[in-house]
Image 1: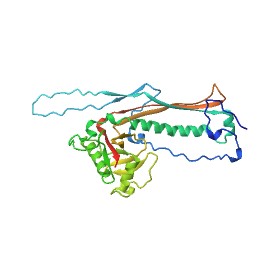
Image 2: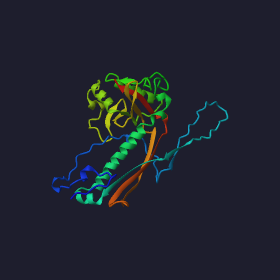
Image 3: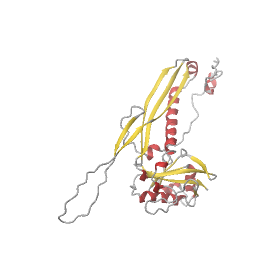
Image 4: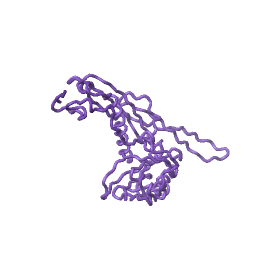
Length: 309
């Protein structure tokens, strides 16, 4: 039996037209998703209880105490430590919504709703990952990026708009060492440091003097979060979610390095529901996720603006 589709409505090609039961498989072709790294490079310590868009998570910062010289018999000066509160606003949201027409659901021999829900979960992570990675670099400390990076030395070239840094298999390891030095000059803790590389940069690593990816100290294959291993104390992640822009005729990207305390992220899937459609015969499944993110320590994040030479 064949069902016509109303003009303006979109039906998945797999479920439209004439249904021939004997040629439909109960298996699906495997779908591969982009690796997401956000949960590995940020902290969710302040997630708290999020009920909807517009909620705030208040973060208290640690005060800095003043150290004074002392002489015998002097009157001590007491300090009243104060610190500013940082507000993480949960002001962003993404949703998905799909409809399964009754006549097509009857014909399908697979659980469409569960399949769609699983796909939506993966696509949601990718969309949020890409948004955050593409927007946080301008919030990094000025000494942690550009052609004069380094809080103390101010002589490390990490590239800048207009003059991106050419990355090759010869200098890619040097760049990682430079990024790590920039973090060290900011007194960032050595434990918990990371770097996120575009896949083409990890290819350069494998062609460099490193030669074998196992030399990173991680013989396990790349996991779903893109974790590769470690170099110079940096946990390596690769991602296709880093934004690329054309600059000076080259496709440039921001490699992001830092410590997990630099970026905070809070998210919650606040609504997943199934309901009957009003304008047609079918079930609607939809979900809403709210989230917020903020660079809470700009000194703990660094960036190199590079292209593949």
